[in-house]
Image (tube, each protein chain N blue to C red):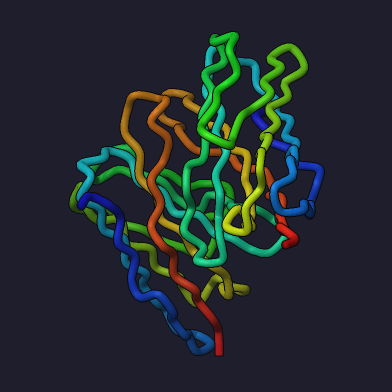
Length: 116
Length: 113
């Protein structure tokens, strides 16, 4: 069964510092995508970054980057130069596509606090 | 602008009542989803629909019902059989290709009073 695990319920980082959020997953597929979503206090889910499994290069979007280790099934998110606006809940997600069953599977989330 | 509209933003339900949460999208997406969010449990899938007039149960469908009569609309009814309905409900939609991700509405907070 496909699962997504985030082992850090809460994290804290100083403004301008770097923080890494962890995510592991389980799948039997060889080609797939992985996502990180941000949920700020407004509770609107925002797609932060996506990674395709067959691509060797780690995805980067401005201050956000991932460390994708396919063999280890690890997909961590690095936030560089943290800003106060980065404070939010972050969810790792795996889009499962199984014929008639297509769904986005979420981890339990990591609540990130940014200290000024 | 294209997007997903959920209404109402806040909803209060009395014991024994059915309530319906609205979800409308103008993205021309084929698939739509309802998720429930509780503290410490992430998002759990309630129901999803890949095409009009078809829908499937998710992981926690008991006490909920849906319909998909139009491509744009996917309302969720929380029935009196749902014993613990107080939660935040998110509607989402998606369409191929697979790397597109899912688009979410802004959510409805349901509280039992």
